[in-house]
Amino acid sequence: ITFLGIESSCDDTAAAVVRREADGSAVILASVVEGQVSLHAPFGGVVPEIAARAHAERLDHAVEAALSQAGLGLGDLDGIAVTAGPGLIGGLLSGLMLAKGLSAATGLPMVGVNHLAGHALTPRLTDACAWPYLMLLVSGGHCQFLAVEGPESYRRLGSTIDDAPGEAFDKIAKLLGLPQPGGPFVEREAASGDARRFRFPRPLLDRPGCDLSFSGLKTAVLRARDEVIAAKGGLTLQDRRDLCAGFQLAVADVLAEKTRRALAAFPVPLLAVAGGVAANQAIRAKLETVAAEAGATFLAPPLRLCTDNGAMIAWAGIERFLAGETDDAGLAARSRWPLDQSAAPMLGSGK
Ligand code: ATP
Ligand code: FE
Image (cartoon, rainbow, N blue to C red; front, side, top):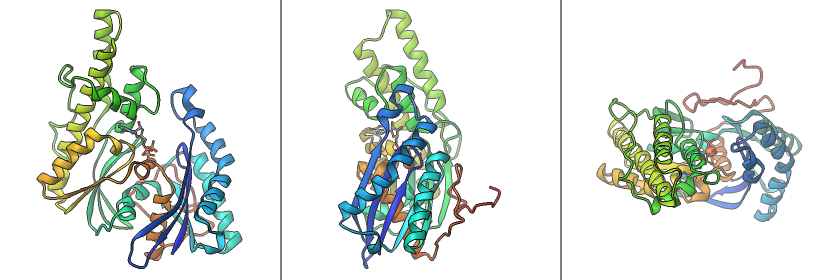
Protein backbone atom coordinates (compact mmCIF):
# COMPACT_ATOMS: atom_id res chain seq x y z
CA ILE A 1 0.00 0.00 0.00
CA THR A 2 1.08 3.55 -0.71
CA PHE A 3 0.66 6.59 1.56
CA LEU A 4 1.26 10.29 1.25
CA GLY A 5 2.82 11.75 4.42
CA ILE A 6 2.51 15.40 5.43
CA GLU A 7 4.70 16.99 8.14
CA SER A 8 4.46 20.61 9.31
CA SER A 9 4.90 20.51 13.08
CA CYS A 10 8.00 22.68 13.40
CA ASP A 11 10.16 24.47 10.84
CA ASP A 12 10.29 21.94 7.99
CA THR A 13 7.51 21.71 5.42
CA ALA A 14 7.69 18.12 4.26
CA ALA A 15 5.76 15.68 2.09
CA ALA A 16 6.66 12.17 1.01
CA VAL A 17 5.23 9.13 -0.73
CA VAL A 18 6.06 5.73 0.79
CA ARG A 19 5.04 2.27 -0.40
CA ARG A 20 4.94 -0.76 1.88
CA GLU A 21 5.64 -3.99 0.05
CA ALA A 22 3.91 -7.27 0.85
CA ASP A 23 7.01 -8.49 2.73
CA GLY A 24 6.82 -5.49 5.10
CA SER A 25 9.72 -3.58 3.59
CA ALA A 26 9.34 0.05 2.57
CA VAL A 27 10.21 2.04 -0.53
CA ILE A 28 10.47 5.82 -0.26
CA LEU A 29 9.17 6.90 -3.66
CA ALA A 30 9.67 10.60 -2.95
CA SER A 31 10.60 12.77 0.01
CA VAL A 32 10.51 16.55 -0.18
CA VAL A 33 11.70 18.72 2.73
CA GLU A 34 11.48 22.48 2.39
CA GLY A 35 13.41 23.91 5.33
CA GLN A 36 12.91 27.37 6.79
CA VAL A 37 16.35 27.99 8.28
CA SER A 38 16.93 31.22 6.37
CA LEU A 39 13.50 32.63 7.36
CA HIS A 40 14.17 32.18 11.08
CA ALA A 41 17.92 32.89 11.06
CA PRO A 42 17.64 36.63 11.80
CA PHE A 43 15.72 35.85 15.02
CA GLY A 44 18.05 33.18 16.42
CA GLY A 45 15.23 30.63 16.81
CA VAL A 46 12.01 29.40 15.23
CA VAL A 47 9.32 32.13 15.20
CA PRO A 48 5.90 30.37 15.34
CA GLU A 49 4.03 32.99 13.26
CA ILE A 50 6.64 32.91 10.51
CA ALA A 51 6.65 29.11 10.52
CA ALA A 52 2.84 28.96 10.29
CA ARG A 53 2.73 31.32 7.32
CA ALA A 54 5.56 29.52 5.53
CA HIS A 55 3.84 26.15 5.97
CA ALA A 56 0.56 27.56 4.64
CA GLU A 57 2.37 28.91 1.59
CA ARG A 58 4.49 25.85 0.87
CA LEU A 59 2.47 22.76 1.75
CA ASP A 60 0.61 22.55 -1.58
CA HIS A 61 3.88 22.79 -3.43
CA ALA A 62 5.62 20.19 -1.28
CA VAL A 63 2.78 17.70 -1.82
CA GLU A 64 2.69 18.32 -5.58
CA ALA A 65 6.47 17.93 -5.79
CA ALA A 66 6.39 14.67 -3.83
CA LEU A 67 3.64 13.20 -6.02
CA SER A 68 5.35 14.26 -9.22
CA GLN A 69 8.73 12.87 -8.07
CA ALA A 70 6.98 9.61 -7.24
CA GLY A 71 5.31 9.68 -10.65
CA LEU A 72 1.93 9.15 -9.01
CA GLY A 73 -1.41 10.91 -8.82
CA LEU A 74 -3.74 11.09 -5.83
CA GLY A 75 -5.68 8.19 -7.37
CA ASP A 76 -2.68 5.89 -6.93
CA LEU A 77 -2.61 6.38 -3.17
CA ASP A 78 -4.21 4.22 -0.47
CA GLY A 79 -4.22 6.84 2.24
CA ILE A 80 -2.98 10.14 3.63
CA ALA A 81 -0.99 10.47 6.85
CA VAL A 82 -0.59 13.80 8.56
CA THR A 83 1.19 14.97 11.70
CA ALA A 84 -1.49 15.95 14.24
CA GLY A 85 0.96 16.87 17.04
CA PRO A 86 2.95 17.60 19.07
CA GLY A 87 4.34 20.85 17.67
CA LEU A 88 3.54 24.45 16.79
CA ILE A 89 -0.20 24.77 16.44
CA GLY A 90 -0.23 27.02 13.34
CA GLY A 91 1.82 24.63 11.23
CA LEU A 92 -0.11 21.60 12.47
CA LEU A 93 -3.41 23.25 11.47
CA SER A 94 -2.12 23.98 7.94
CA GLY A 95 -1.12 20.35 7.48
CA LEU A 96 -4.38 19.02 8.90
CA MET A 97 -6.50 21.29 6.71
CA LEU A 98 -4.67 20.13 3.62
CA ALA A 99 -4.97 16.45 4.60
CA LYS A 100 -8.67 16.80 5.38
CA GLY A 101 -9.29 18.60 2.09
CA LEU A 102 -7.45 15.94 0.09
CA SER A 103 -9.21 13.14 1.96
CA ALA A 104 -12.65 14.69 1.45
CA ALA A 105 -11.99 15.31 -2.25
CA THR A 106 -10.63 11.82 -2.99
CA GLY A 107 -12.36 9.62 -0.44
CA LEU A 108 -8.93 8.36 0.69
CA PRO A 109 -8.62 7.38 4.35
CA MET A 110 -6.75 9.84 6.57
CA VAL A 111 -4.56 8.84 9.51
CA GLY A 112 -3.36 11.31 12.14
CA VAL A 113 0.20 10.63 13.28
CA ASN A 114 2.05 11.60 16.44
CA HIS A 115 5.29 13.25 15.28
CA LEU A 116 7.23 11.35 17.94
CA ALA A 117 5.77 8.05 16.70
CA GLY A 118 7.10 9.04 13.28
CA HIS A 119 10.61 9.27 14.73
CA ALA A 120 10.12 6.16 16.89
CA LEU A 121 8.98 3.98 13.97
CA THR A 122 11.71 5.13 11.56
CA PRO A 123 13.86 2.01 12.25
CA ARG A 124 11.04 -0.07 10.74
CA LEU A 125 10.98 2.16 7.69
CA THR A 126 14.67 1.63 6.99
CA ASP A 127 15.21 -1.91 8.31
CA ALA A 128 13.33 -5.09 9.12
CA CYS A 129 13.07 -4.38 12.87
CA ALA A 130 10.92 -6.64 15.00
CA TRP A 131 9.17 -5.46 18.18
CA PRO A 132 10.17 -4.75 20.84
CA TYR A 133 13.11 -2.36 20.64
CA LEU A 134 14.55 0.50 22.64
CA MET A 135 14.40 3.93 20.99
CA LEU A 136 16.47 6.89 22.10
CA LEU A 137 14.88 9.96 20.60
CA VAL A 138 17.30 12.91 20.72
CA SER A 139 16.17 15.98 18.82
CA GLY A 140 15.77 19.72 19.00
CA GLY A 141 12.64 19.45 21.10
CA HIS A 142 12.80 16.04 22.76
CA CYS A 143 14.97 13.58 24.61
CA GLN A 144 13.42 10.33 25.74
CA PHE A 145 13.91 6.61 26.02
CA LEU A 146 10.98 4.70 24.59
CA ALA A 147 10.20 1.02 24.95
CA VAL A 148 8.56 0.44 21.57
CA GLU A 149 6.35 -2.64 21.67
CA GLY A 150 3.98 -2.03 18.74
CA PRO A 151 2.73 0.76 16.44
CA GLU A 152 0.45 2.00 19.21
CA SER A 153 2.45 0.91 22.19
CA TYR A 154 5.14 3.11 23.73
CA ARG A 155 6.41 3.24 27.27
CA ARG A 156 8.62 6.11 28.37
CA LEU A 157 11.54 4.86 30.46
CA GLY A 158 12.98 8.31 31.01
CA SER A 159 13.14 11.78 29.51
CA THR A 160 14.79 15.14 29.92
CA ILE A 161 13.59 17.20 32.84
CA ASP A 162 14.56 20.47 31.13
CA ASP A 163 16.19 21.14 27.74
CA ALA A 164 16.51 18.74 24.82
CA PRO A 165 20.09 18.02 23.71
CA GLY A 166 19.55 19.60 20.27
CA GLU A 167 18.39 22.75 22.00
CA ALA A 168 21.55 22.66 24.13
CA PHE A 169 23.73 22.27 21.02
CA ASP A 170 21.90 25.23 19.47
CA LYS A 171 22.35 27.41 22.56
CA ILE A 172 26.06 26.54 22.85
CA ALA A 173 26.47 27.49 19.19
CA LYS A 174 24.78 30.81 19.89
CA LEU A 175 27.05 31.46 22.93
CA LEU A 176 30.09 30.84 20.76
CA GLY A 177 28.97 32.79 17.73
CA LEU A 178 28.37 29.77 15.51
CA PRO A 179 25.48 29.58 12.98
CA GLN A 180 22.07 27.95 13.60
CA PRO A 181 20.96 25.21 13.82
CA GLY A 182 24.11 24.75 15.84
CA GLY A 183 24.53 20.96 16.17
CA PRO A 184 26.62 20.31 13.06
CA PHE A 185 28.79 23.41 13.67
CA VAL A 186 29.51 22.48 17.28
CA GLU A 187 30.40 18.96 16.11
CA ARG A 188 32.79 20.34 13.49
CA GLU A 189 34.56 22.60 16.01
CA ALA A 190 34.69 19.78 18.57
CA ALA A 191 36.51 17.54 16.10
CA SER A 192 39.69 19.61 16.50
CA GLY A 193 39.22 20.52 20.16
CA ASP A 194 40.67 19.14 23.39
CA ALA A 195 37.77 17.62 25.34
CA ARG A 196 39.85 17.36 28.54
CA ARG A 197 40.62 21.07 28.90
CA PHE A 198 37.21 21.99 30.33
CA ARG A 199 35.60 19.51 32.70
CA PHE A 200 31.83 20.04 32.45
CA PRO A 201 29.26 18.38 34.72
CA ARG A 202 27.46 15.12 33.86
CA PRO A 203 23.98 16.08 35.10
CA LEU A 204 21.78 13.52 36.91
CA LEU A 205 24.31 10.69 36.75
CA ASP A 206 24.24 10.58 40.55
CA ARG A 207 20.52 9.85 40.48
CA PRO A 208 19.09 6.44 39.61
CA GLY A 209 16.91 6.00 36.56
CA CYS A 210 16.93 7.21 32.98
CA ASP A 211 15.89 10.86 33.27
CA LEU A 212 18.26 13.41 31.78
CA SER A 213 19.06 17.10 32.17
CA PHE A 214 20.99 19.48 29.93
CA SER A 215 20.32 23.01 31.13
CA GLY A 216 23.00 22.98 33.85
CA LEU A 217 25.54 21.90 31.27
CA LYS A 218 24.66 24.90 29.15
CA THR A 219 25.17 27.21 32.14
CA ALA A 220 28.56 25.60 32.85
CA VAL A 221 29.71 26.25 29.27
CA LEU A 222 28.55 29.87 29.53
CA ARG A 223 30.53 30.32 32.76
CA ALA A 224 33.67 28.72 31.28
CA ARG A 225 33.39 30.94 28.21
CA ASP A 226 33.06 34.06 30.35
CA GLU A 227 36.06 33.06 32.47
CA VAL A 228 38.22 32.70 29.37
CA ILE A 229 37.01 36.03 28.02
CA ALA A 230 37.65 37.74 31.39
CA ALA A 231 41.17 36.29 31.54
CA LYS A 232 42.22 36.88 27.95
CA GLY A 233 39.88 39.55 26.62
CA GLY A 234 38.37 37.23 24.03
CA LEU A 235 38.05 33.71 22.68
CA THR A 236 40.60 32.21 20.31
CA LEU A 237 39.56 29.67 17.71
CA GLN A 238 41.18 26.99 19.85
CA ASP A 239 39.26 28.09 22.97
CA ARG A 240 36.07 27.72 21.00
CA ARG A 241 37.03 24.27 19.74
CA ASP A 242 37.94 23.12 23.26
CA LEU A 243 34.65 24.40 24.70
CA CYS A 244 32.72 22.58 21.97
CA ALA A 245 34.70 19.37 22.52
CA GLY A 246 34.20 19.45 26.31
CA PHE A 247 30.49 20.09 25.91
CA GLN A 248 29.96 17.39 23.30
CA LEU A 249 31.83 14.82 25.39
CA ALA A 250 29.67 15.64 28.42
CA VAL A 251 26.47 15.17 26.36
CA ALA A 252 27.79 11.92 24.88
CA ASP A 253 28.82 10.58 28.32
CA VAL A 254 25.43 11.34 29.83
CA LEU A 255 23.54 9.80 26.91
CA ALA A 256 25.78 6.72 27.02
CA GLU A 257 25.34 6.10 30.76
CA LYS A 258 21.57 6.63 30.65
CA THR A 259 21.33 4.33 27.62
CA ARG A 260 23.24 1.67 29.57
CA ARG A 261 20.64 1.93 32.32
CA ALA A 262 17.73 1.89 29.88
CA LEU A 263 19.06 -1.28 28.24
CA ALA A 264 19.45 -2.86 31.68
CA ALA A 265 15.85 -1.96 32.56
CA PHE A 266 14.52 -3.05 29.17
CA PRO A 267 16.88 -5.70 27.80
CA VAL A 268 16.03 -6.01 24.11
CA PRO A 269 18.16 -7.03 21.12
CA LEU A 270 17.94 -3.64 19.38
CA LEU A 271 18.87 -0.06 20.32
CA ALA A 272 17.72 2.48 17.74
CA VAL A 273 18.22 6.25 17.70
CA ALA A 274 16.34 9.02 15.91
CA GLY A 275 16.16 12.81 15.95
CA GLY A 276 18.62 15.35 14.64
CA VAL A 277 21.20 14.86 17.41
CA ALA A 278 21.51 11.21 16.33
CA ALA A 279 23.43 12.62 13.37
CA ASN A 280 26.35 13.37 15.72
CA GLN A 281 29.17 10.92 15.04
CA ALA A 282 30.79 11.17 18.47
CA ILE A 283 27.47 10.44 20.16
CA ARG A 284 26.70 7.61 17.74
CA ALA A 285 30.07 5.98 18.41
CA LYS A 286 29.50 5.97 22.19
CA LEU A 287 25.99 4.57 21.84
CA GLU A 288 27.24 1.86 19.53
CA THR A 289 29.73 0.76 22.18
CA VAL A 290 27.05 0.75 24.88
CA ALA A 291 24.77 -1.38 22.68
CA ALA A 292 27.57 -3.83 21.93
CA GLU A 293 28.35 -4.19 25.65
CA ALA A 294 24.71 -5.07 26.27
CA GLY A 295 24.67 -7.53 23.38
CA ALA A 296 22.28 -5.37 21.38
CA THR A 297 22.41 -4.27 17.77
CA PHE A 298 22.71 -0.51 17.20
CA LEU A 299 20.67 1.12 14.47
CA ALA A 300 20.88 4.75 13.37
CA PRO A 301 18.84 5.77 10.33
CA PRO A 302 20.49 7.87 7.63
CA LEU A 303 20.68 11.56 8.51
CA ARG A 304 17.84 12.71 6.24
CA LEU A 305 15.53 10.29 8.07
CA CYS A 306 16.84 11.28 11.52
CA THR A 307 15.64 14.86 11.15
CA ASP A 308 12.07 15.89 10.40
CA ASN A 309 10.70 14.48 7.15
CA GLY A 310 7.45 13.32 5.54
CA ALA A 311 8.57 9.73 4.92
CA MET A 312 8.48 8.85 8.62
CA ILE A 313 4.96 10.29 8.84
CA ALA A 314 3.78 8.33 5.78
CA TRP A 315 5.30 5.17 7.27
CA ALA A 316 3.82 5.69 10.76
CA GLY A 317 0.48 6.32 9.02
CA ILE A 318 0.77 3.00 7.18
CA GLU A 319 1.56 1.21 10.44
CA ARG A 320 -1.46 2.75 12.19
CA PHE A 321 -3.67 2.05 9.17
CA LEU A 322 -2.63 -1.61 9.12
CA ALA A 323 -3.41 -1.75 12.84
CA GLY A 324 -6.96 -0.75 11.89
CA GLU A 325 -6.78 2.94 12.78
CA THR A 326 -8.13 5.80 10.68
CA ASP A 327 -9.34 9.28 11.58
CA ASP A 328 -12.16 11.45 10.30
CA ALA A 329 -12.73 15.16 9.82
CA GLY A 330 -12.89 15.49 13.61
CA LEU A 331 -9.14 14.96 13.90
CA ALA A 332 -7.68 17.86 15.89
CA ALA A 333 -4.22 19.36 16.17
CA ARG A 334 -2.55 19.01 19.54
CA SER A 335 0.44 21.10 20.50
CA ARG A 336 1.21 18.73 23.39
CA TRP A 337 0.69 15.02 22.84
CA PRO A 338 2.74 12.59 24.96
CA LEU A 339 3.50 9.43 23.04
CA ASP A 340 2.41 7.14 25.84
CA GLN A 341 -1.16 8.45 25.44
CA SER A 342 -1.26 7.68 21.77
CA ALA A 343 -4.96 7.87 20.86
CA ALA A 344 -5.46 10.46 18.13
CA PRO A 345 -6.84 13.77 19.37
CA MET A 346 -10.45 14.64 18.51
CA LEU A 347 -11.97 18.06 18.02
CA GLY A 348 -13.97 19.12 21.05
CA SER A 349 -12.45 16.46 23.28
CA GLY A 350 -11.44 19.25 25.61
CA LYS A 351 -7.76 18.30 25.63
P1 ATP B 1 11.47 17.69 17.42
O1 ATP B 1 11.62 16.58 16.44
O2 ATP B 1 11.72 17.22 18.80
O3 ATP B 1 10.21 18.45 17.26
P2 ATP B 1 13.28 19.27 15.86
O4 ATP B 1 12.36 19.06 14.74
O5 ATP B 1 13.82 20.63 16.12
O6 ATP B 1 12.64 18.74 17.20
P3 ATP B 1 15.20 17.57 14.54
O7 ATP B 1 14.84 18.11 13.21
O8 ATP B 1 15.01 16.11 14.76
O9 ATP B 1 14.51 18.31 15.74
O10 ATP B 1 16.71 17.92 14.87
C1 ATP B 1 17.21 19.23 14.87
C2 ATP B 1 18.20 19.35 16.01
O11 ATP B 1 19.28 18.44 15.82
C3 ATP B 1 18.80 20.74 16.13
O12 ATP B 1 18.75 21.15 17.46
C4 ATP B 1 20.24 20.53 15.67
O13 ATP B 1 21.16 21.42 16.25
C5 ATP B 1 20.51 19.11 16.08
N1 ATP B 1 21.59 18.51 15.30
C6 ATP B 1 21.66 18.33 13.96
N2 ATP B 1 22.85 17.80 13.58
C7 ATP B 1 23.56 17.63 14.73
C8 ATP B 1 24.86 17.14 15.04
N3 ATP B 1 25.69 16.74 14.07
N4 ATP B 1 25.26 17.14 16.32
C9 ATP B 1 24.43 17.55 17.31
N5 ATP B 1 23.20 18.04 17.10
C10 ATP B 1 22.76 18.08 15.82
FE1 FE C 1 11.22 15.95 14.88
